Structures are given as C-alpha cells and as structure tokens.
Image (cartoon, rainbow, N blue to C red):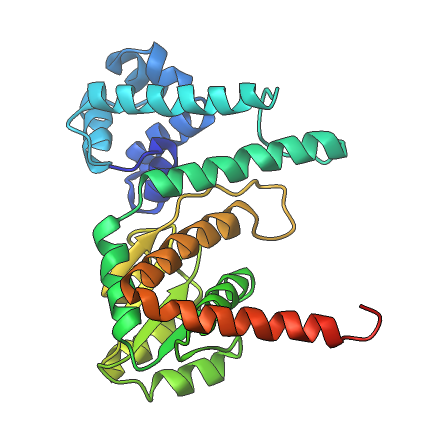
Length: 292
C-alpha cells in the first residue's frame, strides 16, 4: 500500500466516478475531515451515499472507510511533523514568499519525497534491474526535459564503472537506438507523470526489440508503467507554484542512487579498477588545467 494515501487519492482521480471524485476532492481539500468525520457525515458533506464512500476506500485498495481513516491520519501526522520541523504552517509556495520561506518549503517537500520513495522502495524490482544492468551488453536511458537530467546522472555513474551505456535527449535518436536492442540489453525510462509521449514510445520500441524495459515513474498505472517489465516508483508531490520539476527530480535521483549502489554490489570487486582509473583521469585533468 502507498505510504502517502493523499498521493494515492490524487493519482486515482481520473479513474473515479463523479460521486467518488467528489469524495476524493473533499479529502484532498481538507484531509482532516476524514479523521474527524464518521462515514455518514462525510457522505453527507460530499452529497453522496455511504456505499459510495466505502466503494471509494476499496477502489484505493483499503478494506473500508476505517482503514482509510487510519491511513489518512498517518499521512497527516507525518506531514504535520515535517512542517513543524521547518517551522511551517504549509509547504505550498506562494508568489509572495521570501527566500528563507521558499528554502524551508522546498527542503520540506524534497526531504518528504526522498523519505517516501525510500520507504516504498521495491527491493525485488531494484535487484532485478541491478542484476540485468550488470549482465547487459548495453543500457539505454530515456528521458525528456528534467527527466533527461536524471538519465544523464545514471549514465555518468554507470560509465564510471565500465558499463556500456548511452542517453540522448533527442527523441528521434532515442527511438533509433532502441530499435537496435536485443534480449542482451536493458532500457530504463524516466518520467514523473509516466505520460511523456517520446519516452513512452522509445520504451515501447526497446521492448518490441527484445530488451528488458524499466519504467521509473510516480504513477503505477501510467502509459510508461504499462509498457515496462519492471516499474520502480518514486513518490513526490510537486508544488503548483513552480518553474520546473523539483521534488520529482530529487525522488528520481534518490532512486537512481539506490539502483547504482546495488549495481556496484552485484558487480563486486571489478568495479574498483574503473572507479580508480576514472578518478585518476579526472584528477590529472584538474592538475593540468590552466589557472588551477
């Protein structure tokens, strides 16, 4: 079960009936209502029936309203503790916020994203992907915009231990390289929403070519996830007042770090040599650079 029930409610919205959507929107508007209200009171507030509220809880994967209340209470308590840690009433960034408030709110959101991603990590999925990466002839990494930065980060890490790995932000080149893959290869695609068309297409092509395909996304039933053999979920909620991906990028990078460490563990002793060689090469470059 998702560690953050509110994120689960948010993701479920497109699949809900109109009556269930009213319940979801009411909960997202004020989660404490679920804690304070009995099922019949919440049903009246949402202008729906008790059975609809119960069905909504079951749609999310809970046995009933009581289990949903416990989950919401846990999530609200954790959120309140995180806000109190930074002296905040809310983590929502407002246009009038001063730099200190922005820094505190971003720190709270990004720490929250890392913690939730770490707590909900799919250990079996990480292990399957790490072993496949170790054995792979080649690893393709797909991602657009901010997710391209995450792909580049993993590319740099894997190249340092001698893996054959590539990433291109050009969607045409990504599809071209994907079409040349075989069952000896691995393709990993990054998309917070799981609906980036270019990324979904590249992973589809890699899958059809025979590669093991992996989706790193925040949405378990997204188009990208449905294409993949393995889905590694991140958990991040973006502020509506933002200029670029923030919490989602941090969550992706945290998951990439876990995956990379597991790859190193499975590779064992042989990684020491390429790591030392790449370190020495970079150190030599710094010593010979003008003005250093």
